[in-house]
Length: 486
Ligand SMILES: [Zn+2]
Image (cartoon, rainbow, N blue to C red):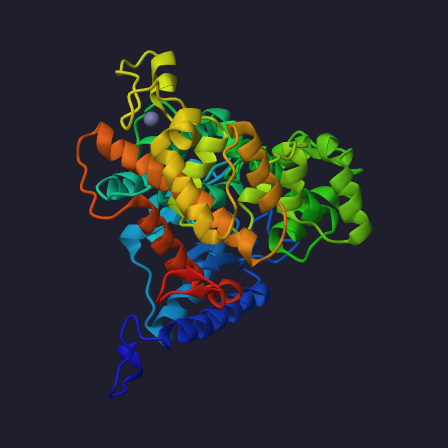
């Protein structure tokens, strides 16, 4: 913006520049609006009713007019005047012109006026392809490529299962979420995206390793024993229900005003008779109409006059039975990696040697502490080595331990952790950290890199102290200095 002739110019990245940019684009908006009074200028036939000459987002600008030389001249003249006044110029090598139903002679004349190259649909606007036809697998490839690039970047880092779960939900699925808000993704792409997420979760790479838990289970909510990862297929249906909701409520958005002006003409979307010349996205929104109309959540949202994509999604996923161990995870302040291993254990999916044997992976099958067969039951509870740890940590918490069989012991943990209070909160943390430490110790023994310098029970206690002292309701019961529970 050095053109204003001031001494101190504003550089790119200056905090004030986005604000100035918005102001200047407002000027462009008003200036192009004056085309209305130019008798030589004609709106694009599908823009006339709403008097649309342009849409823009950040520095992407789309200009529309009828396909005749005079209209394009008028449009270009306004834009050039704007450029001269503000110093904001378009880079001709990055500009394209798109025709629809314009004769070849007119096209040639118009191209001369603009000096822009001829563009082909689809082109990208706001990072997604704009296309007059259904998205092809090929057009969705940039989405897959972005996810692959992320995974390659992370695969060099050492991440726990819990860390990878976070990245799947917060980044990989967030990239896809942007697309699912505007497009119905092809089924193949949904499968591809889910396969990438699944592979990354279980192996840390884009290529696969056997999943320990089925993806559908991983997508279940926490109370039903899952990790609450978004299931794309249902999510895409829910985002389309949201589009339908906005159409039904005739929200004040440009795309809705436009559809209303040219298609629905004031008729409610739920009653409107669909026309064959609608765009493919509009058609796919309409296809969801009958499914959504009968949905209990849709009826409820009409009553409440508010719509939540998340709630629609929950309904589309269907009822999922609660797990009796779900409360073991509520307000469990153990490290996420410890909670993840606990989760695999309660699902019976932790790869102990007996389980590996059943899927054809050969091991010696023995517990690394005592030579008995390694099963979940033995490793985490029955092994005399583990028993000692349980006794020490539970006594430390102030519980009287009676030697009982495992199923009664587990029953006791379930009942106790379902209750409220700070002590149960500590118990949950102890359970998760104990399982995690036993599993880690087992892995160190199996893979031969033991470097134990401290007893496992001591490490569990320290971890509980470290995590607990940051929680107000727990901190007052922890004597960190003496490693005691008050
Ligand atoms: Zn053992």
